[in-house]
Length: 101
Image (tube, rainbow, N blue to C red; front, top):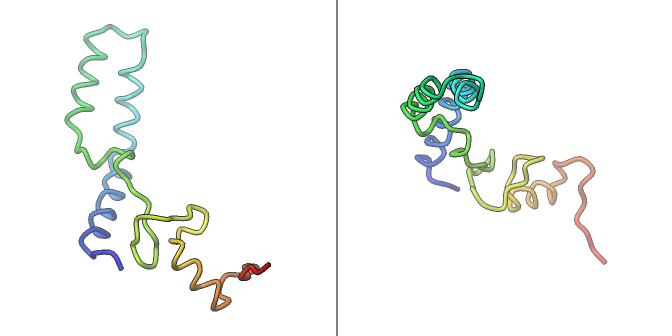
């Protein structure tokens, strides 16, 4: 089980990313538009830099929904490999069986 503080930090980041997504997208469009004058694009870059760091989507880290484990994460199921194996062993994931050869 991951530390609760780390899981809460990640939830806080997700909330900030969602909150600032529109503003960040608008500023990025202005900053990358070559038709606009250089001063206006530079002002957009400065405003973009003033946004909170944790509002950037690149700072998000995938974590297991059940345990909060950050490593060995399966995106499709949103679970870590350990929980995936446990749930598959108990038959709680439809269609998944333990392999043997």
